[in-house]
Amino acid sequence: MENEQQLDCALDLMRRLPPRKVEENLNALMGLVPHLTEDLLSAIDQPLKLVVCEQTGREFLLCDYNRYAESDGTYADSWRSPWSNEYQPPVQDGASPSPRLRKLEASANDAFDTYRELYYEGGVSSVYMWDLDDGFACVILIKKTSPDGVGMWDSIHVVEVKDKGRVAKYKLTSTIMLYVEKSGKSVAGSLTRQQEQDMPLDDYGMHVANIGRMVEDMEIKMRNLIQEIYFGKTRDIANDLRSVEDVTKGKGPLDELRSELASVVGRKR
Image (cartoon, rainbow, N blue to C red):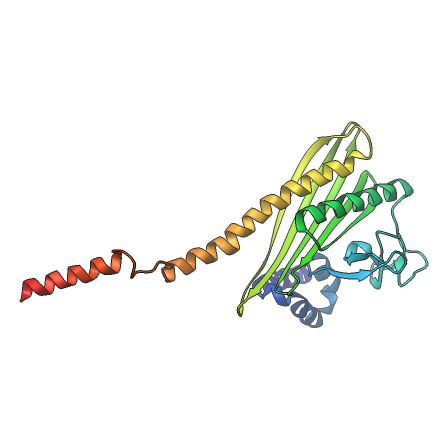
């Protein structure tokens, strides 16, 4: 019970701290409550990092889903490349998807690589899959950083898939982390949404198309929400504080106020 209360307080604290400093704040928090390290790492999304696959020369993204896990549940600093299916640095018994699922994973990486290029015109994407008792799960990662370094977009989509014969049930949890800085001002935050959907499944390969369609629809919805929440609200507040119109052009509220004051003063004279 005490650990649960501490975890709730830690998560509540992280929600109130600047998203831009999530790594720094998370490391400080784990130093205060080291016994909650694994819970904090699994519950708090961090900005995605990328490395280069030593075998293929292609970049891939790092997360806990492709990180090597010891038998006791702790993690080691070794990650599986989606391009070579090998861990780097190498490990002896690293987990990897079954041959059938690995083939689907490779197909999904090619598909989302095209999706990323079409929608983001750059960046890096990675897809990782793992087997479950009644299906499988996967994570789709997309990262885009602006050339001048003032903007960053991270997408993390976790999908649980349950096969039901000719129909599959998909549960999607999407998180988008955004950071934009310009002229000394910054906007940062994250947004998480969930969706469940049953979709037809004529063959095993259709999982890629079904997951891709769900991720595409979800990203469009979340992008519109982010534009409204972060940028629309900021613009509305700024406009309320200071008008953007040139009051010297035309007869505006200021001119009307001046005329009214002048008429009142004239009558008193």
